[in-house]
Length: 125
Image 1 (cartoon, one colour):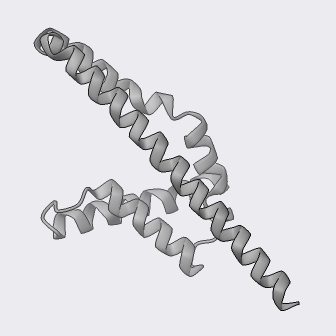
Image 2 (tube, helix red, strand yellow):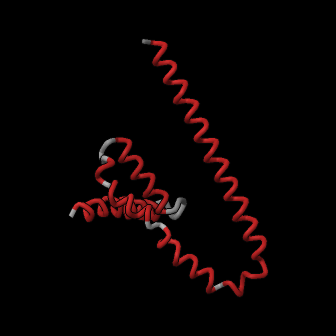
Image 3 (cartoon, one colour):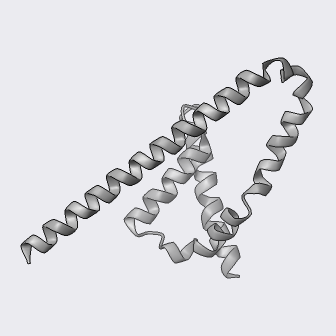
């Protein structure tokens, strides 16, 4: 029952994000709005991490299953895109590197800010 309740919270955020996307006439994708809504609910404390934690962990551990339909879709149109495959792979490699660099930079900045905050707290003691 706990998992159904947690899944219900996640699906409610997803549905609300989709509804909001329709209201915004597709200016932002529903899944992005749903995740933003979940983040907002978590930040405000209206949803606690234990309300979604187990189901979210399960979904993250089994994320590969969610990519199967996209991969199969690519296989269906492969004959049409095979002439552009090198360009597609280059874009995939470049965006992967950019994402890794942005993530590393973000982690570096957050660690630096946390270190600075700890030093300020120690200085006030």
